Image 1 (cartoon, rainbow, N blue to C red):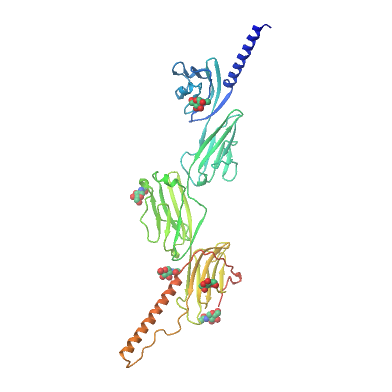
Image 2: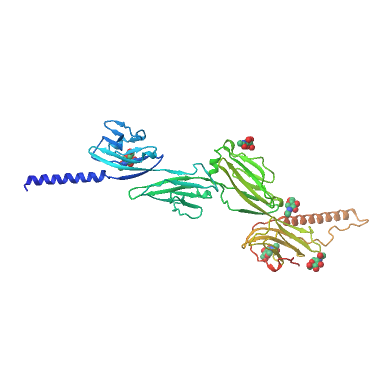
Length: 475
Ligand SMILES: *[C@@H]1O[C@H](CO)[C@@H](O)[C@H](O)[C@H]1NC(C)=O
Ligand SMILES: *[C@@H]1O[C@H](CO)[C@@H](O)[C@H](O)[C@H]1NC(C)=O
Ligand SMILES: *[C@@H]1O[C@H](CO)[C@@H](O)[C@H](O)[C@H]1NC(C)=O
Ligand SMILES: *[C@@H]1O[C@H](CO)[C@@H](O)[C@H](O)[C@H]1NC(C)=O
Ligand SMILES: *[C@@H]1O[C@H](CO)[C@@H](O)[C@H](O)[C@H]1NC(C)=O
């Protein structure tokens, strides 16, 4: 082998190495890309050695080409195709397809100079059972079409992988995900992951659920003459809802024994804000769907429902108001040797795992009733502070106090029977009667105030002797 042929050989070797490199960089024969109907897609094609002139074809039809200027071809997607001039000057001849259609599926070729690259586009169809805002309690199905050679998995709004458990069901060999009994916590981005040996794609599905927080049964405990506040907290979609029209809301109520709710008042979201009804004296309703009852009465007990009706349907939440009432028979100060019956009444039967207890504070007398009863009575002669409480699993849900006051045995208004007393003495006596009765009045007022004192939900646990369950605990 002569020196010249050696040079020629090594030139050839360099050339073929260059060519090989070019082929592996560009001609990734069978490169597959995944797209979604309605979205845009970039079909890659780069060649650093070239500066311009590219032809993109779909089958045998030209999609777009650049020969000094951009020309659109006859392929069906030609009008939705673009090439970026600036990128092209850097050797990036990628094709951008806008608003993908199912018929865009197929093989595309990119020809730059003497090099031709083939790219297979697989378009997926991602659909859902409803595109509107969803209502709490409803169902939603997310779908992806089945394509041979691909696997599909799903992840939820917390990026956890979805399995067919609880409210989630996978159908059509995993291509349909059904979320049942939607909760506001399901709001967020769910994702479908498609994989094949040569390509992968993640499709996001935005899910918005309109509904109330803590939908599970909520109970509010209070005592007569105390306040009760509760709210129908919604997810922040409420702000968005005020933009929507035709949403009607209502606050409804039914007493303990009734089966049907009655409307207390309704409201709507007309002209961009929540239009509240005329407020009632004993029940106020605020714009953030909060109910305030400053002085609850026993007959206010029952179920309060807030219901919002949209064109897709309605969502509602029920809150149970349980009221405690204490009373004494006879009322007023207790004379010596007389018994008083203290009654503590609940607007509902004592729930399971709970007890209603009357106890003499710092004393030993107590009486209690277990689940199923609505009241507990105690007959006593013990003056002082009494407390009735409802506790559940060792925590106090509500308590009310009552003070038994001892009657004043002495005659506090002295009988005035003096005759012939000097005017000075008479005046003094008059003064003393005045101060005496004034002190009495003050004392009675103080006693009344003690009696009126109600304290709710104290952190004090107590054990009831269940032997006392059915009887009175006598002094
Ligand atoms: C090529 O250009 C497209 C836009 O047409 C761009 O999205 C893509 O990132 C570019 N690729 C590279 C490797 O720069
Ligand atoms: C509630 O308050 C009213 C007036 O303030 C009073 O007459 C009534 O006895 C109170 N009821 C109870 C159960 O405390
Ligand atoms: C909304 O409420 C306002 C005031 O209460 C009322 O005048 C109006 O008719 C209501 N609109 C609808 C659509 O119910
Ligand atoms: C008060 O209760 C006690 C104990 O039950 C009873 O012996 C007594 O007769 C009762 N007194 C009155 C006045 O009812
Ligand atoms: C009960 O006892 C505690 C501690 O001994 C005392 O602080 C409290 O004032 C007493 N309460 C009543 C109502 O007697």
